[in-house]
Length: 331
Ligand code: SIN
Image (cartoon, rainbow, N blue to C red; front, top):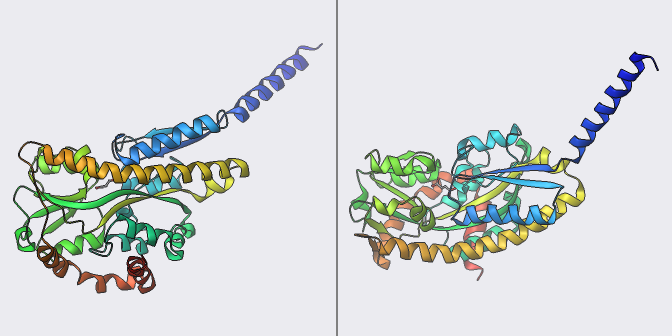
C-alpha cells in the first residue's frame, strides 16, 4: 500500500476515535454559588450532584463551585449566558437587573413567614416569575428557601431610631436600599464574600441576613446584638441558561427536572430546621443577645419601612404585589 494512503487511513482512524471519545463524554453541569457547603443552598447543590451522578451516571456530571470560588452572584448571570457555568442559585435579592418583579420578595413586612412565601411561589404569578427572564436567555427552574432575615450590629436595635446613622451591608436590591434609607441608615450593596471583612474592619456597622448565613459566615463572632425582625425572606431561584437547557436530550432534561423537584422539597425542609438550629447556635455564642421585638416595636419597624411599597409598585407590578399579599390571606 502506498505510504500516503496508509497515513490517510491512520489519520481517519485517529479522527474517528477522537470524535467518539468526545461523543462519550458526559454533559457537564457546573453549579456555582456563594455560600458554604453547610447551608441549605450548599447542601441542596450537593444533593443535586449526588442524585445526578447516580441516576444519570456517565451521561451527566455535576461539579459544584461553592463560596464564590468561581463567580460571585453579580458575575454569575453573565457567566451563565456565556456558558462558563450551567447552573446557579442566586439570592432573590440579586435579580433586579434581569427581573425587577422579583424584588417583590424584598418588600419589607410583605410575607408573614416562609409558608406565606410558599403559597405565593406556588400561585400562577409565582410560577410565571420563574419564566420572566426567558427574553434574556435565563430559565428559572425552582425556588429554594433559606429563611426570614434578622438584623445585627454592635448595639441593640430595638426600635428604628436605634439604626439611624449606621452603615449596613446589604444585598444589591434597591428595595432593601430604600428600606434602610427610610431609617437613616447608609446601605452599602456588597457581595456576600466581603461581609465578614467589612464588619471586621469597621467598613459597615450592621447587616441583615438569614440565620444560616449569619452562622455560616461567623457574623456572631463580630456582632453581639441581633434583632429577630423577620421583616423579609431570603431565598433563591435556581437558574440555568435557556440555550443549555433546551439543547439537552429530552430524557435527560426530564430526569433533571424530576431530581430538582425532589431536591427542592428536601432543601426547603432542611432550611426550616437549619434556620432554627443556626439561630440557637448564634444565641449560644459568647456575649450574643437576640432581641425578640414586642408586637408594638415590630409595628414601629413596619411603619418606618412599608411606605416604600408604593414607590416600587411601578417596577414590580401591582398584580404581582397583590398576588403576594393575597397569598397571606389564602390560608
Ligand atoms: C446567599 O445566600 O446566596 C448570599 C446572600 C447574601 O448575599 O447575603
